[in-house]
Every structure is written in structure tokens, then in C-alpha cells.
Image 1: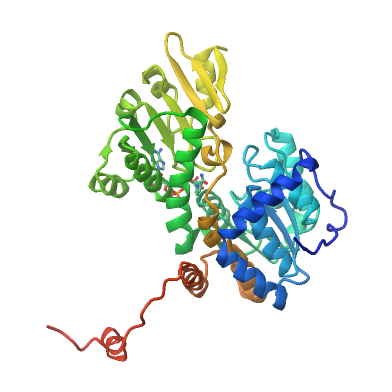
Image 2: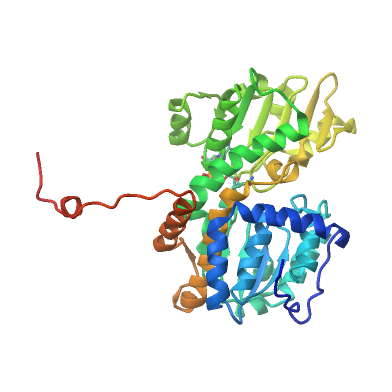
Length: 430
Ligand SMILES: NC(=O)c1ccc[n+]([C@@H]2O[C@H](COP(=O)([O-])OP(=O)(O)OC[C@H]3O[C@@H](n4cnc5c(N)ncnc54)[C@H](O)[C@@H]3O)[C@@H](O)[C@H]2O)c1
């Protein structure tokens, strides 16, 4: 593989990864993912010719996976200098981090299983590169710059945000008048949340739970908390494996949607006693807590696919177990609550990344195509934007869908001139 190897931005440690010796395995897996990412590949080829990101410094806080590696390569091909930190302590693929640091010359700061201090030190290393564009998954980099490095905020032209929880945080910042530059919410592209959140998380959450537990889903009572894009994907996949699925919600419309999609809707309290497997995907805090844990069956399994490890009240779980906690399998910890045991997968962190490989590359192809095109748009238009959260321009969304269909070899027949005139007119009636 031939790749440009730019030197890291001045002042930044070049990398902090677990084991550079893992790089060959990482390179092979990055190349495997690349095969499933035709849209990003086509953008990379164009970027290499046009160099639209020349002179841009991108500070990225993303899950360090094979798909992210291909996004970094695309941005680099466009002429950007890129530095990367993990957006979750448990999601880093150490072989990928090693490959990025060596083969691709990208300053990467990420070690799987890093503690909280290391996580924030790694974010600080990315901030030290003085990014002019931020690319976040969960808003931690934006939050760090605005809370601890206000002097640097003015250096940033704009940012992008990958996930629902990050967008929620950014909107709260904008409402407080605290957001210092415009951010494009990549999550809001239809070619992102309709596919990544639903099909990507649906499949990879199942994958993570199965890899960690080897549970048979068929015949089991599966509780899905939150029927947003992620919850819908998880519920559908669990039902597809023969699970009896119940949804818990706080939003009556989403609850009704779940009901009409064929799932039971229970209260959290009813669900606690009914479920064998619990999966949270709400973006909220303490969705299942002390009273729910106390009501659960012996052997219940809990996992989270929401962004932060705050959806299950882990402090209460630890208190209830009074120290009777042991790892029973890789990525599964058992809490003995006095006569019954409940199990937690991947420490309550994103189970699809903690216990599996995250989303399949084919779906990240669209999410990261949006990221790359959003950055290109911001380089051209960022100065015209206000300090608030923007959606992805419709033209980018449509282009990503068009390129993805083309990669599947699918063409659409355009409207006839008669049809175009018909739908544009208000004069036709019965
Ligand atoms: N694991 C992954 O790879 C991955 C991928 C995409 C998004 N996410 C994260 O998953 C979470 C959900 O994302 P989404 O796009 O589905 O969001 P969403 O806003 O579409 O859906 C969240 C749903 O949770 C419901 N909810 C909120 N509080 C609740 C509570 N206490 N009990 C039950 N339901 C509650 C809301 O009413 C809403 O319907 C976010 O944290 C997002 O960042 C994770």
C-alpha cells in the first residue's frame, strides 16, 4: 500500500498506542473494511486530485476502528493534517491505532481500556495540535475546548458531530449561548441515522451481545429501552432472532410506534421483572436503576448501546452487590445481589464497540462519507455560518445516497416530463 506520510502537527506527541507491533494486522483489517466502503473510496480519489482540505488541521475524537481509519485516510488525501483520539475508553481497536500511527502517519492517541485520566490526556493531545476543524463523536472534544481551552475556540472554523448524544449536548450549548463555532450534525443526515443508527447498531449490538455471552436469543424476553433509531434497529434484530421483544419508552408517539410494529410496551418496572436480556439505547441517564435491578430475575443480562455508560445506574449495582462482583467471561461481569446474579456486558459501555467491532463498514461508508463531505463544505462555507448547530446540506445527503446506490449497481428511473409537471402543479384534482 502506498500512502503519504505527513509529519504530525507541531507540538503534539506523535502517538500513544498500546503496541506498534500490531500494525500489520491493523493494516489488513483496514484494507478489508475499505472494500466495503465504495462511497468513501470515491471521495478519497476525488480529494486526492482536488486537495480541498489543504491547510486544514482536523482534530478528531472518534471510535478508533477500521472504518474510522479509512475516514482519516480520506481526510488526509484531501490535504488535511489529522490527529485522532478515542471517543470511548473501550472502543479502540489497538491494531488499527498502531497501523494509523505507523503506516498512515496519523498522530493517534488511543488505547483500548484506557482509564479516565488517560482518555482526557489523549483528548488534550489532540487539542494540542490546534485544530481548525473538530470532528466529534459525543461532543467531548468540543466540550474540552470550550471549558478548558477557551483561548483556542477562536482558532476553530467549524466542527462536525457524529452521534445523537453529541448533537443533544451541542444544542444545549447553543441554547446557552456557549457554542463558539458552527457545527454540522452529521447524525441528522438521513443517510446517517436511518442506516447507521438503525441497521448498523441493530446488527452490531446483537453481534456484541452474542460474542460476549453466546446467549440463545430465540424464546428469550428481550427488553429494549428507547425506541429511537437505535432502539428500532435493535428491537427488529432481536425479534428476527426469535426473541420476545418488549419496549420501554417515555415518549407516547415512539411507544405507539413500537406497539404497532408488533412489540409489547411495558413500564420500566414491569419490564424489570419480565426480561431476560436488557438493552438500553436512550441517550438518557439511569434508565434502569436500583429498584429495577432488585426486581430482575436470576441470570438477567444487561447491555447498553447508548453513547455513554450512564444508562444503567452502575453505582447502585455495585452497592447492591456489596463486593460480590466477578468477571465470568471476557466482557461479562456478574453481580451477585444476594441469592440472584445479574450480568453486565462490556462494563455498560457501547456494547457493539466494547464487545464487537462496531458497525459494519458498509454502513459506516455512508456516515463517514457525510463526515468527509461536511468537512469539505465547512472549509468552503464555514465562515458564512453562525455559531449554532446545522443539519447536513440536503445536496450532500442526496449525493451520498446516489453514490451508495450506484455502488450496489442500482439505478433509478427519473420522472417523465409529464410526471415532473404533474407533481409541480396544484391544478390537477379528481
Ligand atoms: N452504539 C452505537 O454505535 C450508537 C450508534 C448511534 C447512536 N448511538 C447512541 O444511541 C443513543 C440513542 O440514539 P438514537 O439515535 O436512537 O436517539 P433517539 O433520540 O432517536 O432515541 C432515543 C429514544 O430514547 C427514549 N428515551 C429517553 N429517555 C428514556 C427513558 N428514560 N426510558 C426509555 N426511553 C427513553 C426517547 O424518547 C427516544 O425515543 C444515543 O446516545 C446515541 O448517541 C449509539
